[in-house]
Length: 189
View 1 (tube, one colour):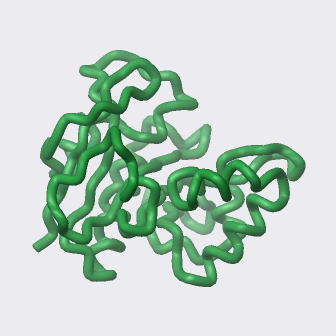
View 2: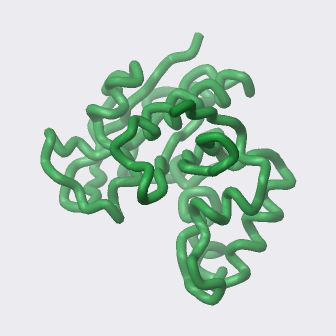
């Protein structure tokens, strides 16, 4: 199995990873952290996908993992200043560095437990580095090995980020799926 991670530039592949199975469903599209809450709450069904299509005109909203020609994974990454993490009161700012936030790592069913999430994190970091990011932050749960509900596992785990070279930079006041979240950081310079 060869996994290639590249910037998300094909809308249909992004839709495969974060869009709904039914076009009339209200699903995340991975924009909840990317747009102001008011906009996210006002976007419903097909409008969410169209918003992502427009957002992609500004640049890739993350990275996609491919096995051959098949898209198998997604990671959302973007400069923190343009996300809700810039204003989040529960997740602190360590400093004023223009870091990038990595907030969603998703692997398609049927492809899980094959290390694709690790490829996605590494690919997201490389994408941020190529765009001049001085550091990348993630906000995973510190589940200490306990099982996580798969629908909530997209934020990642502290152990996953540590395996990718990230270090804990701060505790947060955020709790996700019953577990505390920590701020993990990987300096790129």
